[in-house]
Image (spheres, chains in turn brown, cyan):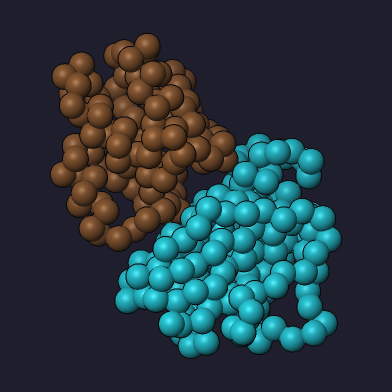
Length: 118
Length: 151
């Protein structure tokens, strides 16, 4: 399984990378914003899963999500929104825009594992 | 300031420590901030606007910040590591974002976090009282300062 972590926080990427590593996944890519994530996605397909932050500079998570879902090449990529913004309206917007699931920070390793479907 | 507004931030802090650091934190008695003001080595600050205006801050002694962040990222970190600054900013961002869900009636927006280094005190919004909430956990102590004025 190949996973792309998209978050402008190095801290969050380190936490996620460690937690995902404990699940036996070692093929992990990282991007600091949506634009970089699109480039990493195009260059590294097939990517199975994207763990996507919401608020980022350059290109935010929802813009990345809509852009990726508009490209047939990425239709099978599972995308999980990872956000500290827990209002239902934003979650609904993400799910309508093509997110497969979401996880609210602060999350436990167990919750992440469950959301990843592992 | 309506002190009930502080509770969502306390609950969010306890949830962050439990879920992402993996230890239990306890609160000591919240206090109205008065001199002598507490000093911190590193702090994360986020501005709040909307139906209320002000800020939420976390102030740490360096030893506590290093121990808590090292446990959170599951790797040793040094006090001069740039990732420590990123982590302190992310902590206040996570807590403010999580607390918002219990303050939806205030329609709060949160700013990008700022991190302050070196021995300092924190100043809240002018004209708004500041509540200081001390926390302790097995990795050290820290304090949250909430300064909020409803519009």
